[in-house]
Image 1 (spheres, rainbow, N blue to C red):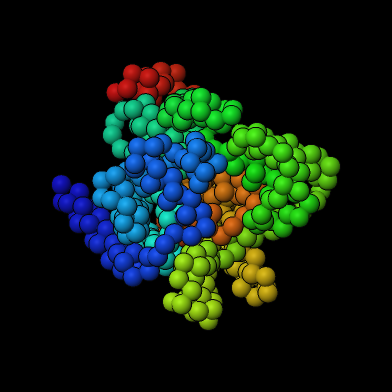
Image 2: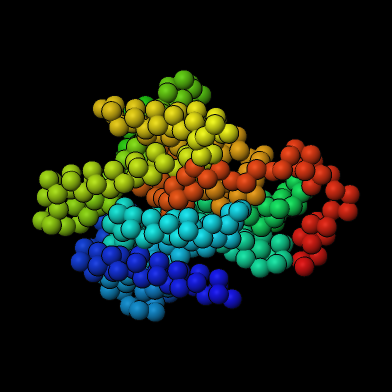
Length: 474
């Protein structure tokens, strides 16, 4: 009881610590939405008014995923369409994210370490990039929040199958905001049933993924009915693939033109399919050129953090002269790069004579960080690969540390998605709270399995009580 009361006070303290700076920037920096935020705002206003999800031309729309506009539209419906509603909603989700990271660290790491979990929450609370993102009507704050809600639910309660379904449903909601969040649903294998056998984990992953798809399905049906064809969530997948592969591709966002290959289209789905076909043709024609863009794509995704400042400068140029924007970008990027340098150490044992691999791994990570700092292009993306590699090496012996493995899994989905499509620094923000968790667990390698025989005993248990628990729901 005392422990739970202490945890409650810690959570409330993290909430307050995170909320105060987010409220300030929400109230002081909010201006009219720009760039993608303009379209999300239009969609939210139409949903709040009961007209459904429509675009700038007034007809049914699904080029961008519906989730964020629907969430913002609900807030507009309840509190009005004032300029501060969205940023204040972001402030609330950001403050809750600090609490959620703390809870995830407490519940899904073995052995439990309250102090490190609290440190993770503190890092999220004071993360300057996450704070600066609060006034933006963009999807990343909501995506990051949902990607934390789901794993916390997956570790709560006693019924593994219920946790899998509930967590999967939240991943489905996250997919309506950011479709690639569907890739996170199988992570239930490390969270809902992390102490079970391989079969238990597989069942948990399947249940979670199925629940996510069930949540997405009604929106897919809507698209099939009102659009010019079926689309799972949105019609920007082919568009994004083309941006990452067309002849003028640079590895980041570039505007597509009709002259690039899709000059005559009659609907959004047809347009997306056209770009998808063109992208497949470009990749097939020169696969080496497409593969050569992968490092650039990952560089744009992981090497720096500047989108929030660019957005704020676009919305309020007088408040953000070039010199101030440059200083702010450097500050945000510096904090992000520090996280990138320390996060891989979550899978490294404390360097010692008993842990020689910890020394080697720490030196390797330090070398990658030094290259990132000293090189003119500041390549920090190899540290993301190192993080995933470390988690993979530890997968056999560290599988009970669900929080760290989940964090690495989310980073791996970012690498995969943006290597295929294109990169921008805002895309890594969905994983920024999880990077904070990994940093807090630096040089604390997850508990090793006692021996390979113990693992084999778990996987080959004849009575398989975990399967019965998962299927019976008790």
